[in-house]
Amino acid sequence: MVLAWAILVPLGIIAARYYKITPRQPWPQVLDNKAWWHAHRACQFAAMALATIGWWLAIRHARGETALAGLHGLIGWAVMILGWSQVAAGLLRGTKGGPTDPRAAPPHWHGDHYDMTRRRILFERGHKAAGYLVLALTLVAVPTGLVAADAPRWMAVVIAIWWAALAALAWRLQRAGRCVDTYQAIWGAGADLPGNKRRPIGWGVAPGSVWPQEN
View 1 (cartoon, rainbow, N blue to C red):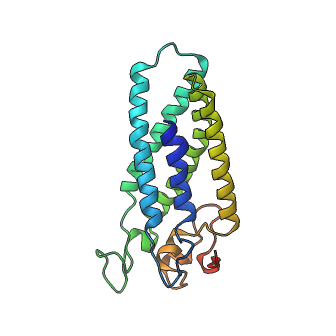
View 2: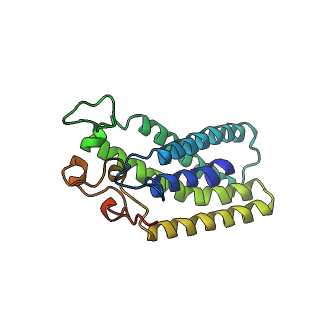
View 3: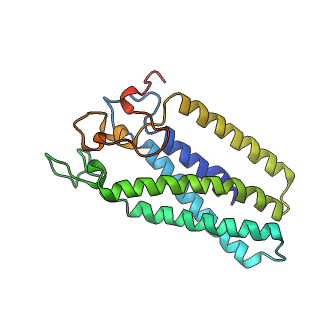
């Protein structure tokens, strides 16, 4: 559970939020860098696999529940449900579209993401909101789980240092304007593109047209 929720999930979120355009990528000449997508998917799928094993072990072997353990269990159920709903939502996010989608046809390149259909908008809003809610719940679930399991004290210290380092990294990347809209990272900032005719979804998203390429 610690590896899943304290390590992999935050890394996957940082990859998705701040590395849609990599530091040396000559955007917008080079578009649709999928490194962030592979990293995000690998981290979150691995996290859910590990968390499911941990959940199964907890169900089988947990004994002598205390009030704190009960609180941890309730939060844990919420986190697991949200986590698996994220996986399911990802499978239902719709088609991509655009010039790089072999299933899309010119000249319109129709797809849920390229056209920013209602389905894609609902997916992005729900996926991002649920992801940050899971992250917030993790900040409670992990410490209560460590205490309930009487884990070695060094684990809490290491996790606290790790989270502080991730928070500092996120703060630095946010200040640098590295949180770029997925749409613009994939297709550019052209005003004629259908997805650029609406505001980016999410908080703190920088327009790709002003992304600081020197970073």
